[in-house]
Length: 388
Image (cartoon, rainbow, N blue to C red; front, side, top):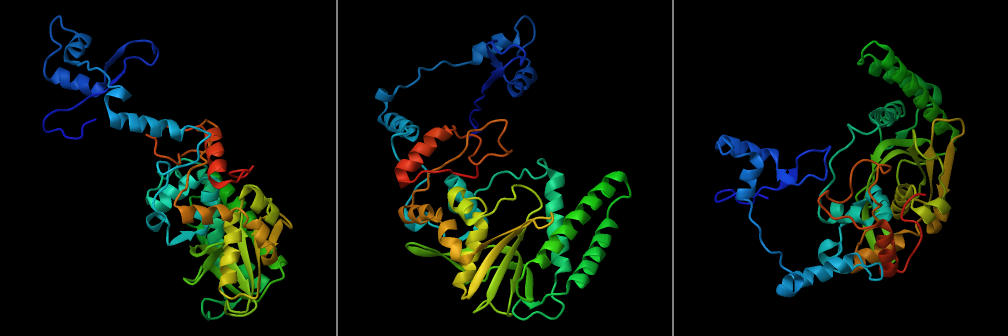
């Protein structure tokens, strides 16, 4: 609107009254103040009359008058045509340039649900506005603090070797957990809200800890461990470097090479269902399957990944032998990186969708049903674009 203000400023118009949406457009409040400061509204001249005198009417160019406009009109229509696949004008580019060197496991999961996330975050390096302070702050804080408390309680009881050490006994871990919880409670005010929050957090942490020791796994442990730089995700035509942090890893030896590895992911809310079949069908919890595949690339002899919730026996796991089914969604990722075409499967904006937007707010949205048709024609695949 005001790219260069040295010579002139261009103002938009705005509705004068929210209660009267049929009123003609009037100057916005910014322009009103400029006119008042210039004393243009004194006497019998009202604001609308001044605005009408300043307004300029220009004929709108049609596509036939300008070839470049005609070209863009064709691009605009093609982006909304469900019978046409995604092309170079729809989140695509030279694969040498747009294919990322590495991806986080979480971003891969989000990208399978909606490739537009990969385009904006891994190619353009732009991220949406952080909505965490506005959305479910208590539940978010509960999960983050539970992860911190479990990491403190399960720290190795001896000096770690290559990041791994002997796992403490269950009683010792429970004692350390209670100690960490007491330190945390001392930081909060003494009132009913924080009493309630602390009681819920204590219940969640002890439930998660109990289920950690219910798993038959190795005696060596690492908490909040980052994947080594050598970790790779094997796709049909390439190996992609994967990054990510694991809540908890248990091994039968202090090394990835030749180990029996159990990856544990703590879950304090959301859908408790977890299986290789569901992962491959909907992409749900695909991040955990990517972790397991990356660990296998490090030379682990065998491996499992677990989703643990606080409830009694709320434990579900996937073995590395099931990964071929669970990672079926990644065939699309390999083709997208090879061709440099990402596309999108963004859900329609509505009051029922989570806060925040995948695309910039200034983007003209395209219906989800159209995107699904285009995606299927581009990659010759169907199915659900996300969890259902």
